[in-house]
Length: 406
View 1 (cartoon, rainbow, N blue to C red):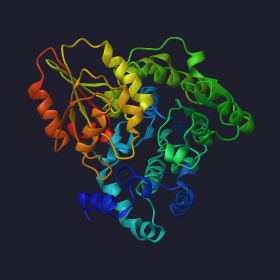
View 2: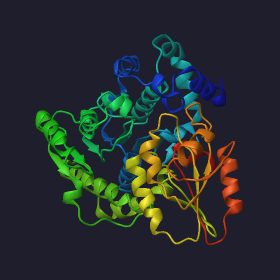
View 3: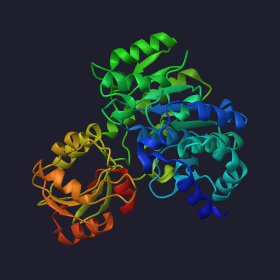
View 4: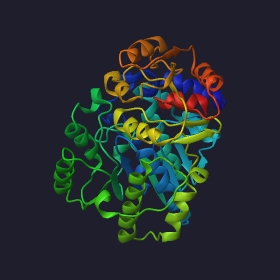
């Protein structure tokens, strides 16, 4: 198979949470342990930083990887989901994994994947760990897919564990309270491995403290310890907390040794993160006159911050291109959106996408009015045609909506 045929096989043959939802989710790491053993346990040869959290874990992972790259290290970065190209998920110093490596990996292990009924995510984690081990990276930043305790990435023993924050998302899998979700994410805290907490609330702090005591892990609350940060090309207001988390993680790494990370590497890493690590979709400007901004925030916790920043913008009329997946709690997120905006409802082009007409009907119950469109591109095009020079267009609601307009 060539690269395109290989991707088609992966997307069609292997259960994929991003497109299928609950049927692709695995509630334990048995399959990942089997795959790791099949591959010769590449994760045991890796130095890693493990990053979990409801929101901000992608930005935090990219910022960390960029700082380490600017410090002169060969840095593996594993994130999910991808926006445009599958290979975004697995990169070393900003270079995506070669197409040929992906093709060879699938070809070599295809029978095993089919026999063990691996999920798309499990297989991709195995690919990342093998690739990083073979390329002899100095350090790797590994982003959790969902939760932590039972996530496929949780077969590593990292140098540092990071939990960015806790919000209500994926409650059908992780629990419907902040405490329950914090417990799942705290599952990445390992024995004698320090942990950095980005943000906490009254409900989550005791969960983190209890787990850290159980594992004899030094715990660092970044929001209490870091007062000032450096400028970054990531412009969202919510990036302040992510930058504090990264700075505290770097401090811990510096204290541990043997990594040397000068302050100038932190400054350059924050400024070069988009260029060095191909990060997209985080409060990303796409045009002026009218101003166009997209953001991948897709749960109440993330959308509150993004919509608060949207309120600070100057515009005459706000146009919102909005699409969501079908397992989203609309009663939680739709009340957050401004009633004065004009809405362009659409369905992301994946099986999990919520029908645009259903979204429009549900939104109307919260005073949000607009039209439904057959595709994201049609909705976006209509917004651009209707907007005047002093207006603002915002595109969001789902990572998959943003991916279609980039």
